[in-house]
Length: 489
Image (cartoon, rainbow, N blue to C red; front, side, top):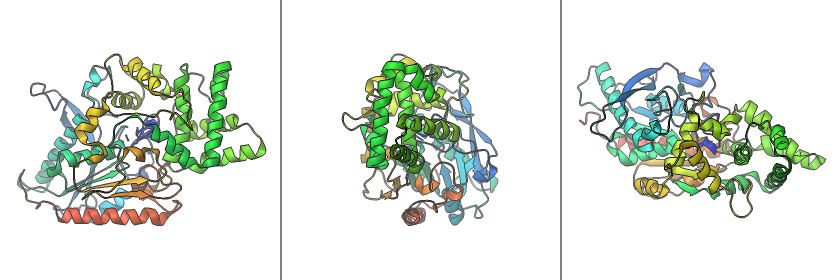
């Protein structure tokens, strides 16, 4: 999940650049997701060969029989035993361009599993509509997405049965995986469809919808440490002052003079900082700030250099993805930001607002800013009823079983996840100074992409590998306890 950007690709893109640019980076950062963050390098994917199925548009209407084409990917190289497990990897709030070769590939090889991943409805090439008007977005929700997964699971099982010349009643053992927003979907799938999966991994799974998510900013400050936090707070104070006196000049300094709304600009600056801790790159930000402070150089200019060179250029974040006027476009070049914000504004909120005291981000990034954005971009009547979302899924009191929750200690999104173990639902915090969003599957840093989730650059590889061993033990146990492979539907 990425902030505004990480729950996109930067829940899944923070739950959110999982939105703006890379997978959920900030909120934009959709709590993230792993679509956009992956480059075109073939070695980063197990496969990029596209496959398609017909998916129902509205699972809750008995009279609406419209369908759309949903893209998916499959990888069978490790599936030597036709009766072996099938790993369903949930693709989240960004374009799903292949099966990434991260630590899930290592687990799949160990268990001899087939790996499949369907693209989330509306994202990438799986959109039911060419125009993303607010009215056309009414079928975009986690509830519809969960039924997509259930239908896909049955479709693919039947496909395997046909491929191996088996009777229609044969059923392989399935296990579900997800990171960030898709991590929440993984947990919710086990909750709502326990008969369709032996268990789930909810990596950085943001299962708690939060209206005013002040803990996000508090964690940014904690992960930054006293010195870096103080520098970021000084930058925020100075930028707020400069916006009042000469807003065009300060925005131009950051390469963001196209952002006419001051709140959009300040959200971009907040996301840029949050992303470094969310994705395990604290030194990329804190080291230059510390050097500038030591040499008496301008902190604002140093931060502007970081935003332009690292956040925008290296991570590929587009300034336009923070522009409400761009978010209003119904046929944008990159639709993920508009789509994720709709889910935010209609279902889960995750409003990354400034705390009343000791905030890192500007106080102008507040509840009013978020509500105004929702109204401005989508019109009247779009509002995140987080009470009903948490009532439906249970939040961190989710009443399910056989779900592993994992979180990185430095990840601001972990405060929307289940951080305490309960019966049959173990929860692990991976503790190291660059353990962030989806560390168990992505390694360190979490951006840029690391083949097979390489943990060697984590400040404590042992902490990561210890949790990975626990994950494998749970998968092994729950697969062994699962239904017989010949169970009928």
